[in-house]
Amino acid sequence: MRWNGWGDPDRATRLPDSVVGLLRELLGVRPDPVPSVPLAEVAPPPPAPAVRALTEIVGPGGVLTDDETRIRHTRGKSTPDLLRLRAGDASAAPDAVVLPAGHEEVLAVLDRCSRERVAVVPFGGGTSVVGGLTAAGDGFAGVVALDLRRLDRITALDAVARTATLQAGLRAPRAEALLAEHGFTLGHYPQSYEWATIGGFAATRSSGQASAGYGRFDEMVAALTVATPRGTLTLGRAPKSAAGPDLRELVLGSEGAFGVITDVTARIRPLPETRRYEGWRFPTFAEGTAAVRALAQDGPLPTVLRLSDETETMIGLARPGEIGAASGDGCLAVCGYEGRREDVAARRAGTHAVLTACGGEPLGDAPGESWAAGRFSAPYLRDALLDAGAFAETLETAAFWSAVPRLADAVRLTLSRELPSSLVMCHISHVYRDGASLYFTVVTAQGDDPVGRWRRAKAAVSDAIIGAGGTITHHHGVGTDHRDRLADEIGPLGVEILRAVKDRLDPAGVLNPGVLIPPAAG
Ligand SMILES: Cc1cc2nc3c(=O)[nH]c(=O)nc-3n(C[C@H](O)[C@H](O)[C@H](O)COP(=O)(O)OP(=O)(O)OC[C@H]3O[C@@H](n4cnc5c(N)ncnc54)[C@H](O)[C@@H]3O)c2cc1C
Image (cartoon, rainbow, N blue to C red; front, side, top):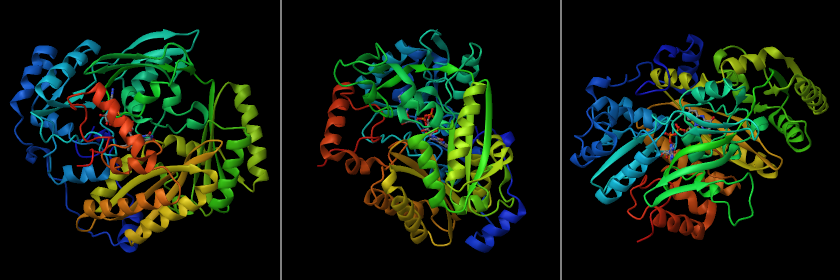
């Protein structure tokens, strides 16, 4: 992973000249962008001594305090995170990176850190885009990033129930490779797939590109094991239960504030016999939205279902591998089908009938296969945009269908007002019977103080989202970025409930302080 960008450095990409020209002409991007500070010149503050005692639990090789490792565990992968690192700011670096080898070691680390008042940031793939890895270390004797990479095995697989117990630090591609050896898949493909982990997916309620077919990650979770400063929580005795409120739901989305998820028993599916992705064109986003809603509500449902708006279609971001190539007008929808051959054939035929009746024009396999080939490329494109002096960031929300058009307009208008000379693009990324998630990408010139400008724009957009009836986040999570909006989402009493749970599970308050739960007033 690039320390100041995304992904495999060998896959770094360059923007076509046509796109660079467009950025300069249309958005006023300056031709002389400030380059990133080299890694060797970034100096995090000296590590606090309190963290060294953790070697008694995890061994000397399990506590890393070298600068590079600490820098690589500083913040996550939002654009402001990357811009701060590119500017050489590693002031938020943890004092140490701790690598437990199993659940018992996690318990022991949490116990020791609670007694020594050392803050603990659970660290999976480090792909958070909402400040979920930036703990408030003030008042603590130190901050450690608890990197779960050593918890990387499948410990059980029940082919009859179709469940597998996956350790939390397993990265998604390895989880898929291990499951594939047994003929199974999770089917969870977020855009961060290459780096994100099983524990991170559960802790943030992640949603993958194939959610129409496989569901969100939280729907895949049958059971969890959680290490807390108060001991172990083992949740999920049966697929469903009437034994009171479902505490699995309390852990899903808890973003490391209640405990460390050490394994997840996930619902798995047989590997698909076949996969097929196709493109459709709709004259307008409104007509495309109506078509996608028809599928979501009355079926049949493809495995992948996405609809780009006119701007995203025109720019070609719907197919990141072909950015800059002419994409035509209207709105591109991608429909993907995965599963048994006859099931794919039936769903595909049914989908064709619905989309045709809704005014869609079939574009064949090429746009769909092109989307599939480039489905994890967009984050590499962001690095190229940053290198070129542009600012690119994303945000997401969801609402009931009746509010979706209003919500889309409100976010577009607010972003365009707050960031004049910007490109604002949107797609429907996940669908449900009752609503959909909208995913926005904004590209503008970095200019002066890009992080401050984005913070102000994001605050205005958050107001617009709440005002238009949307959720503050559909799948990125709360982190620190959305924390102060949590009361808008669940009300002050809801926040009090979460605070009470945290107080009970984490009495010393060492787990990811400042993330998810707003501080109590006064
Ligand atoms: C380029 C890019 C594309 C993305 N695309 C998507 C997408 O398509 N869909 C989507 O849902 N998200 C997406 N994300 C967001 C991110 O990948 C997800 O939030 C992901 O679920 C985080 O997994 P991770 O392993 O990287 O967790 P991290 O980023 O390491 O951690 C995320 C949060 O969970 C906590 N945490 C991590 N592991 C554990 C654990 N075992 N126990 C308790 N707490 C834990 C952390 O403390 C932190 O608060 C994207 C991010 C990037 C940078």
